[in-house]
Image (cartoon, rainbow, N blue to C red; front, side, top):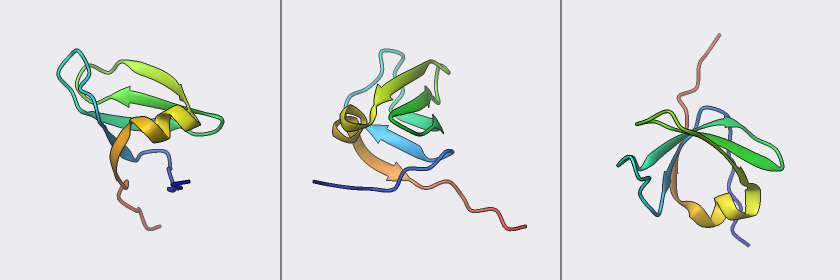
Length: 67
């Protein structure tokens, strides 16, 4: 199995384009379901973790904040 670390604030690029034309989704919730929001149209989805793993092409980590 392919495991990867997903955190709130990360940007995921999906294999298929959203109908609005966007490719990138921001993670706003993690758990059994992953909550993602389209960065183009702000549409929110909840995707089961195993399906999310299959949908993702790449993950861009959120910038780390110090403080």
